[in-house]
Structure formats: C-alpha cells, structure tokens
Image (tube, rainbow, N blue to C red; front, side, top):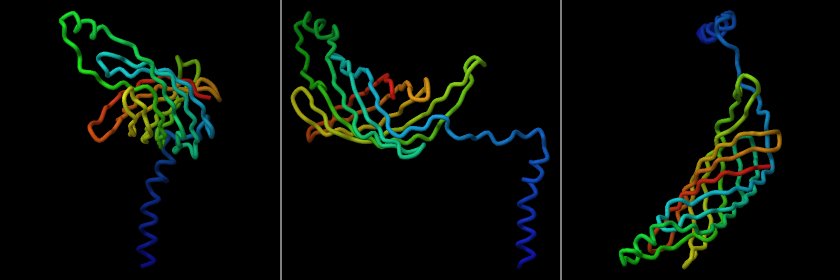
Length: 196
C-alpha cells in the first residue's frame, strides 16, 4: 500500500517538475491587491429612467464596510429622487387623453451584501497602470413613494475604477422592486459616483 501511495505521489509531482523546467510556460501572475479598503463613503448622481412620464434624477450617499477583499456590507445607501417630466403628458393632453396616474419614487434607503469576485490591473496606453474591480450587490430596504410607502428588494452590479489610493469612480446599475400587497413597481437605477 505504501508503494502504491509513493508511486501516485511521484506521478502527481511529475507535471509540476516538467512545468518548472519549461521556459515557454509563464510564471504565476496573481498578486496581492494594491488597493484595499475598510471604510468607504460614496456620493453619486443617477437616474431612474423607466417611467415614461417622469424620469427621476437622483442624488445619493452611501457608507460601505469592507470585511475582506471579497466581501463587504453596504450598510446604508440613501437616494433622493427629483422628478424630470417628459413631453409625453403634454402630447396626450393634446388629444384630450388623461394618462393613468402612477406612483413616483421620492426617496428610499437600502442596505446590501456586496460580493467582489474580480479585481484587475491593466496597462493604460502602455504608459501607466489602471486598477479596478467588479462587484455584485443584493439587499433590500424601504421606499417612500408619492402615495405610499413600500419595502424594497434590490439587486445590482457595480464597476469601480481606482483613480488613486483613496479615490475611486463607480458605475452602478441596480434594479429596485418596490413591493406592496397590490403590485410590484420596478425601478432601474443607473448611477455614477465618487468613493473615498
């Protein structure tokens, strides 16, 4: 039995020994992250583009606690939405058609679990290095609409580009589902932010 174990161990070690002698094979390129975070504060502007009558222009602020390089908790993200009316309501009024009233999001607060599986390093015009990461978010919260208050469930993806050791730019795309007993109102949020 010991001979069999020794033969298996020897056979398993052969490919690694051959690879070490082959200069054509690249070396291991995985490195530690250059940018690590513990506390992150984010300010962002964004848009809620789905409502055909009133788009929402948002300003928001968030605090995120990073446990590791892979997992974090966006403790609180507060959004305030300002209405931007489209021309559709005026066009319908020209035909004496009154649109069905819809609720509009005024403000909402969410908390999210953050998973950061991809951190990358790239060359910028062969002159400098750029660093970034991809994040996935899932969570929930509470929203205040024009005529009601609703719980919120949300999922999203975010992309970060590091500008320096302490400053980064973020692009977030999130789907927020505002839920009550009668219906679910989905709102897509697209935001551009700066994090410290």
